[in-house]
Structures are given as C-alpha cells and as structure tokens.
Image (cartoon, rainbow, N blue to C red):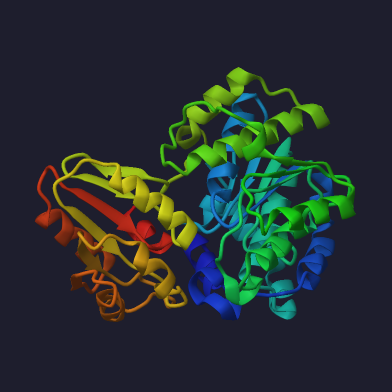
Length: 406
C-alpha cells in the first residue's frame, strides 16, 4: 500500500475517535499493553514527559518541544488530533514522520492489528513509540489523547507528568463533575514521579493532592509558583497559563534529571514555537484587512477565553464562521457567543459533523443569527465577501472547521 492507501486503511478499518466519536473510545489498557509487548516494550527505552489536561495540552507540548530543541536535544513529539495530515501527530525536532516509515510499520504489523482489533489510537501510539526508539530521540513529549488513566499513552513512565487544567469536556467518558474528570487526568501520576499542575479549582486540587500523596510524588502548582513568563509567538490569551506550566516543567526537569535547559533556551523556545514545531490553529491570523483569526478551542473553558479575547479587538462588524461536531453540548457553548455578530453556520466534513441547518436552528434559541452553508469553505468565502476591511472574522467551534480552512 502507498501512503494514501495506508492512512485510508488506518482511518476506516479501525475505530478512530476523530471521525467516529464515542464508538471508538476504549476504556481499557489491555490492547496497548499487548501491542507494547509485541513491539518489544518501546516505552521502556524512552525518556518522556507526559502531558494531560482538558485544554492547552497541545500548546504546552509544542512549547516544551521548542524549548528542548533550542537546548540542543533531539525531541520526539506525539500529539493529537491532526489538522490536515496524520503525520502531524508524530514529529522529531519539528519534522514529521516519513510516509515510508508509516507504510512500513503498518504493513509489517497489519495482520496483528486486524487479529487483535486494535483501535486507531492504540495503533498510532505504538507507531510513535516505535519510531522514537528507532530514531534514538533523547526525550519524547507524549500528549494524552483523552482523559489519562485509561488512555493508551498511559503505559509510559515519564520523567515528569503534566496536567494543564480540568474542564467539563468528554463528560460521557470521563464523568460529569470536575472531580471525576480530575480523577481520570490524575491517572497519569506515577509512583515517585513529579507532577506539574497548570491550573486547579477548589474541586480539583484535593484530587491531585490525594493522588500525588498516594504515589509519593512531588506536586507543583504552576499558577501559584510563577509570577511572570516570556513572550511567545503563540499569542492567544490562554497561553499565559500554558507558559507558566511549561516553565515549571522545565524547572523540574532541570532539577530532577540530567538535562540542562537555560533561561535563554526557554526565551528562544517560546519565540519560535511555530518555526520549531509547526504548530497551527492557536489564535492563528490568516488575514489582515479584514483581520481573520482561527482557533481550535472547542469546549466551554477554551471558548470563553477566546471569545473574551475577541472582545478586546477593535473592529467594525464581527463575522463568525461556526461549525461543531454532533456530540457537542450546544446549551453549554452557544450562550458564550456574542449576539452582535453575523454567523455563518457550517458542517465540518466528517461523519461527526453537525448539520449546519440544525446548528442554525439551535443558535436561534440564543439569539445568534446567520445563514447555514453547505461547507466550511463556502461559509468562509461568504464571510470574506461580506466583511469590510475594518471588520473581524473568527473561524472556530471545532478543530475540524479550522483544519478545513488551513
């Protein structure tokens, strides 16, 4: 199989949460442990940082990678989901895994995957760990897919665990309270391994403290311990919390292990995240007149920050290109959106995408007015046509909407 055929098989033969949603979620580590054994336990041959959280784990992971790259290390980076190409998930020093490696890996293990009914995500984690070992990375940053305790990435024993924050997202899997979600995320805390908490609430802090005590792990609350950060090319307001989390993680790494990362490395790393890692879709500017911003924020906590940041902008009219997936709690997120905006409702091009006409009808209940369009590109094109040079266009609601624009 060539690369296109290989990825097509990966996306369609095995459950893929990115496209299918709930049916692809597995509450079990059995398969990934079997796969690890089949691959020769690659996770035991790697030095890792493990990153979980409701929001910000992607930005945090990329910032960490950028800083470590500036310090001269060969850095593996595993994140999800991808925006355009599967290979975005697996990088070394910002360079995506080769098509050949993906094809060879899948071809070699294809019959094993089929026989064991492995999920898309389990297969991807195995591929990333195998690749990082073969390429002899000096440190790998591994982002959790969902939750933590039962996530396929949770077979690693990292140098430091990181939990960015807790919000009400994926409640059908992780629980519908902050405490229950914090319990799932805290599942990445390992015995005697330090953990950095980016943000906490009165509900989540006791959960983290309890798990850290049980594991005899040192725990650090970045929001309490750091007063300032450095400038970054990631300019969204929410990056302030992520930068604090990253700096504390680097400090712990310097203290606990044989790593040397200087303040200048951190400064340069923050300024060159996009160049060093290729990160996209975080308060990313696509146009100047009118100003066009896209952002992958898709749950209540993330959208609150992004929508507040929009209100700090100076513009004539606000145009919002909005699409969501069909398992999104619209009663939770739609009240966050401003009534004084022109909406362009659209459906992301995947099975989970919510029909634009349904989104339009739901939005009317919250006095959000606009038209439904047959595609993301059509909605964006119409927004560009309607906007004057002094207007502001925001594109978001779903990672998949941003992916189609990019």
